[in-house]
Image (cartoon, rainbow, N blue to C red):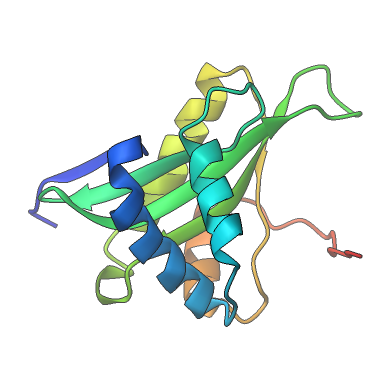
Length: 148
C-alpha cells in the first residue's frame, strides 16, 4: 500500500470519526449500544485514569479507517499486568491491506512499553477474515469464553 498510513492515539477531536468507525464495528457484530455508552466509552478512551481503555486510530492520508481499543489489567497468574485487545476494526473497503496487522502491532508495542508481556483478545468463530490475520500474528488458545 503506497498511501501514507499513520497509527496514533485517539484524541478528543476524533470523536466524530471514532463514532463513525465504532458504529460500523458494532454493526459488523450486529449490535448497537445506547448513546450514553458511546459517550462514556469515548470519554474513557481520552481519559486519564490508570485503567481506562486506550484507543488508537489508523489513518490513510489523514482519514481514519480503523480503530483498536485495549486496556491493561492485573492478573492473578502474573506479577505484571496483561493487555486485553478488546476491539479491532478496519473499514470494509480496505480489509486485508495490512491495517489490522499494524493496529495489533501498535498494541503489542504499547504493551511492551507498559511492561505487559501478554496481549490477548477474543473474536467470533465466524470472523473468518479476521481469524486469518490472528492465526498469523497470535497463538490460538484452547479457552472458551463464558459470560453472564
